[in-house]
Image (cartoon, rainbow, N blue to C red; front, top):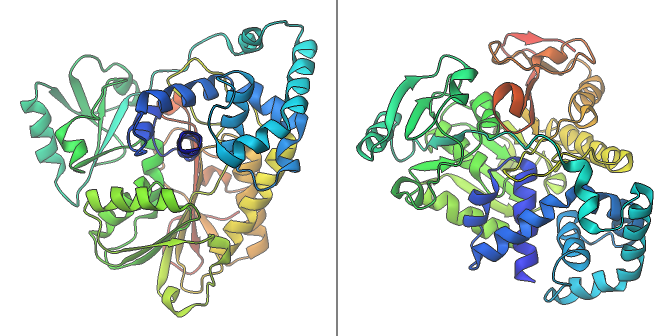
Length: 430
């Protein structure tokens, strides 16, 4: 069961934009990293097929306690892998539905007019996923940008200075690196540069984190001493980024439901030198905004579960649009959790982000909640130099940011910064 749980946790991390496959596998704590990597990679390769089978068989509707990422891993191994050689009670659950799942796979082959499993991947063929740069965030709780640059130079890397354009990032090769043009503590290396055994990474002096995943904490920008909530925190990259911005002054409340993920997160935060934090195994929706311990919370980072449709792996997979039913369910949850976050009485600023490219999970969620809030909150027009803006679905949507492999050389992402009206800010009204 540990293998399937670890693979599901990696898939969830990819969906949230917490890092690439290799980084998440290596930081998972699972002892057999090659086995875990292979299972995650193959599950991702078959992801569009698995989504279609899961939807057609209505497995998640029949087994409401089965986590979606775990379901995907189990169904992959049942239908295309080694046939569920481990898994405990979840293995038994999946096998109960084996006939229905196989029947749905057979129907899918008929609809697509193919006879072999591999032929189901044919629609995924075409241009490979773009090779994204390796982004390295300097952990300022332990070091500074200048010292990290000097360290890499001593290791034989050539520092080319601050990038002037996104195009300049795409031309990196060999042992050359740049300082990012938007984020002042982010270094950029050529694609697939491996730092997992590098001294700076193992000691927590640098964090391997996609650029788009760095945007939420950077844009939230809480002042040192602030009280901050990270509502959907594990595995902790964004939490550690918030702590660095706070300079370990203030307090971070971080929530996640999974015990193992919280334990991994605690280890990661300790390695990164984070001190002022409190982890809670709790659903953020069950947190009482009026509780006295949260009376000073002025900033919230909200990166809820989403379809993960913006995630680009370094594998030859296709990006499949999630089904309408799943999108509706996700958007309803996202609206609910965003509304809940905005109910904290001392809240001044909130960042809402997803690793989805779907309008239903992004602009539509923000618009609906802002309308619900009346004039209490407004969108802040952040990073005007950022090339990709929110879809023009409502007045002010251009204040939001979007990210994409083609235009920003990052994972697909969406970020909106909401601020309570009356606070000083350059803002767009919805």
